[in-house]
Length: 238
Length: 263
Image (tube, rainbow over all chains, first blue to last red; front, side, top):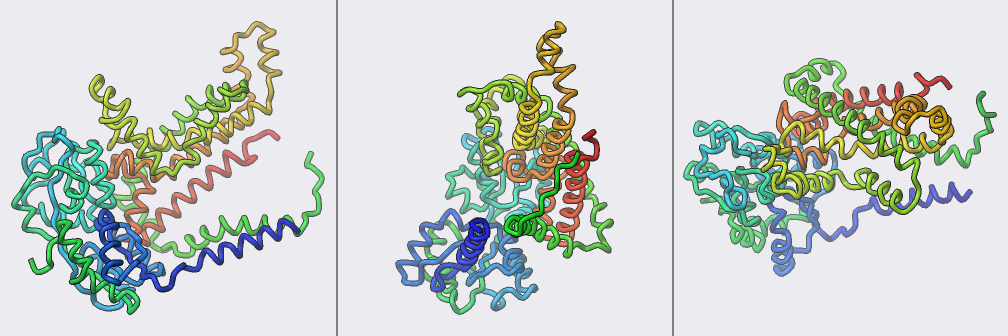
């Protein structure tokens, strides 16, 4: 009897926990590259009367996969238009989306630049430990576009999100990698200027339901937008 | 002789059934989404074949390492009690309870080229484990070892020391007794431990991607391939999952069940 009681109690507990907490709080699915700025974004959204919000940070492609599988959300932000288009095609966005900010890649090196990296061409140099994002994810897709025709990347690892790559660079386990310039800056990584990379940008795209509309608007031209520009993101018009 | 079958109490059957459903329903969910008609094509694509090759190499090597290192460890733990043995046992079990990503990070800090031990491996021998197949083997061995040790330690404890003592009476040294008496007598448990360790190594994801990275043909094992494919080609991801599941299931049945045992 006690056992059945315990099972029943466990089922009830799961049912209670399974119901999402605060209905008034917008649930925001945001790409990994926004995660380093969570605290600043929280503060800005709260101060401007839009927040607080609940965040789910993951690779854009993971977010879209979650959404397609029925994950709850009020706002979806992806790190590129292609990933957004997949969500849109699957019918899980609330509209065709708006561009929010743009980002660029940076050639980031391990602390102290042990590989002696001087230019983008070093990504093809053998003997260097080179990391990029996998071509399935936005930062990897942008890496392919940005380096096309300039250098064939001889990668030692293809990471599934930009944060994993940034962490390995910061730990000095990789010599060089292509991460968003905002991630490089947030992690304090040294970067090597390269004009080729300046020509390729990715636009972050978002969509929201009525509960998340104010949050999305803040990302487009409000307080959250200002935080991102401060962090090194670019205006979409640039 | 089989033990007398007690009439199962409904009070036990209900939670037992719920437990079975908890593990079985997700598997059925996976199977019903599998693209059966194109399964073979999907499993023989170049990327999947690459991943199969890496997975076989890594999981077999890790299972061998877990056995070679785990067997003496299990024996020492089975024959010793006391604080030191308790501490060692807890330490060996840590990878079982640690989130694999944390395990991978710990491996990076220990064996990475800037790591505690890794910096010496790098400067003395020119060995750098991260982002190599050997690194993936280390990650898989790290998570697989406790599965071998716990399985075999329990069996060695249960078997007791009678046989070893008898061997000692006949003049065999401890090492001879271990190799000629203890190991053959624990064959079933060793096979069971090997199967568990191998299956765990085959399914390893978090520690591998964190410590060894992800590169086709080098460190991209089947679980990593599934993770990437989930987001670009979900049907192929399910196909590869079905493969992984079937192989692990078959091996666990054969080596853990009563197929080979004399009982």
